[in-house]
Amino acid sequence: MKQKYVIIKDDEKNALVLQEHAELDKELLSLLCEETYVGDMVADAVAQGKAAVMSHLRTRNMYPPSMYMDKIADQVMDLYKTGGGASAEVVFDDIELIVPDHEPIGVIEIEEDSADLDDLLDDEEDTLDDEFGDDDDLNISTNASLKIADDESLDIDDDA
Image (cartoon, rainbow, N blue to C red):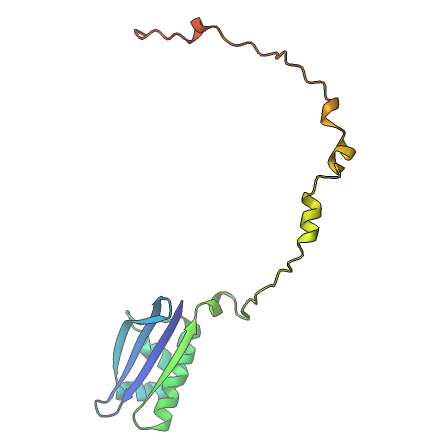
């Protein structure tokens, strides 16, 4: 699942808005959560360092994983160091959490060499009969050792 965090610094309202978007449908990001923070408090947290910014931005509703929060905090610190109203986006793919050095799998081309397959399936030479013997040599008796039950044993008394 892909996630995108939009960070908007609004100097007019003295606020920082953090929006979380997630890919709920293929290639369609939906807004999951939006948190608004007081700009002066975020500026104080930026002055204290990254750990303070991460702690301040995490709320009950907005609690990204540490790997994500680290990059979000970096963007927030950059926005407050440059000054002025601005915005930033941070995009993540959950496959990076599962497989850190993930490379996309390429398509493997299969050669259309059907001659080998035809050779395996071809039974004109009777190679199996040569290796395992001919079926005609088998002595199969039609006298079975199983005895079929009488009809009386199959009659069930309905009163029982």
